Length: 416
Ligand SMILES: *Cc1c(COP(=O)(O)O)cnc(C)c1O
Image 1: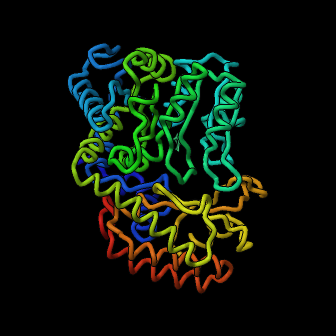
Image 2: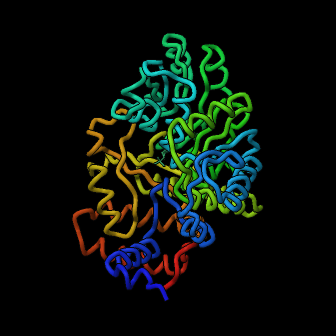
Image 3: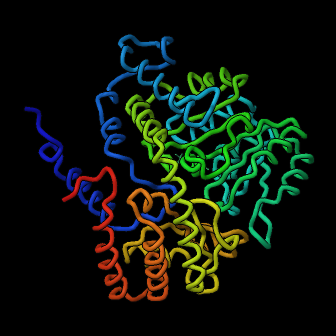
């Protein structure tokens, strides 16, 4: 018998077990995180990690692809069916490489690209300066309006006409409102830009019909597979048929070597789960929970960026409380509420010490929590922020949290 992980490496085995306990006992409010199902974890932890498969199905550079070709074809077919896409590439290692492949497919270094600025809720890979996408390309950022924190389409159009971007990105990482994809389409058409919708955060909402879909509107749609979609850590790109060859060539051999076949299989499993009718209920409940949580926080005196949410996340601006986002997020973590500190639009504090905390409901919804639990979370959040320096209060809240999480065991985590 081959020795198990706990025999070979008890230190790592113990740390994984501790992480299981933490994930089961705390309330996961980071909106980019979720719980993958046991089935997804099984596929992801399989022997498929052993296989090299550079290339695409039936056009590989290595032999022995009998299972791998079938697996990748299933993943592609299910993703296309789930999103109604003409073409899908499931090989990107994650969301950032998926975006990088789009740059490689359509742009040359020095070309102009446009995306939502990081402080307004955009992603690093949409041209922000510290990212390769901001260093190798001439990046123009659009923002949100000062009064309602929504994307200002007039500003997007004016900037696009002035700078004529090759790539126009829509989508964000800390944007709590709906994206108007048709409006971006018409701006892209006016200036001859390739429209890229990055749905990394909202893919599960799009798949479940709880957010409008950019598929068929944007030229290219990129995504992660591990956020609201509840798959393994991975990325994917969907494209209009005329861009299929350019995207595939950019991913391999342009950017990557062998695909992560264990991830591909787990993406296929996650897509199969998302194709079930129950996933629509899941997506709807994520948004219902998010709105309930936002309302309960507002009732308790919190200020929300844009005044609320249309999707799975909300951004608290703690300026009125006078508690920095980092201090609040740490206090919440001590209380068993795991969130992340985040810049708010027009933040007067620094990105590493910003004014906001970002929260979201994909993971708690995966555990079966509904509106009543959102009220509890809002109340705990209020108590934790108020008592941010009082370890005894924070420990007391953590105890209450553990009592409730015991009633809502997350998928994928063995109990005990
Ligand atoms: C999370 C995210 C990404 C990057 O995904 P990684 O898997 O972390 O590389 C890209 N774009 C957006 C909008 C995201 O939210």
